[in-house]
Length: 109
Image (cartoon, rainbow, N blue to C red; front, side, top):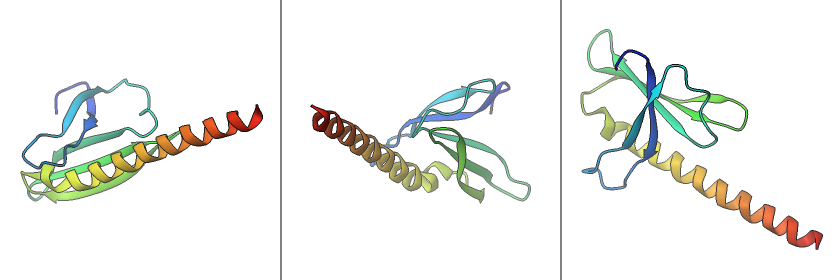
């Protein structure tokens, strides 16, 4: 990874495995991840392949989502299902939260 970054911020993970995972470089001095966003970081593994880690932004902190140790060179195909599922789950939670908020506001009328 380039100097001055701490990984990439995932924007999308298409279902089609031929399409790339959409990412942007995440500067080393960037604030913590926004709620529901995923970052990926990779470095060469000591024996072979790549050590890849994923973090998830929660309301007040970032949490370790997953690690893939000594992943092969095509590691994006390996991490895609996890990234896609978590992204979908976070989107579903956002919709449910918005619906609950709207319901609560309507109940107060």
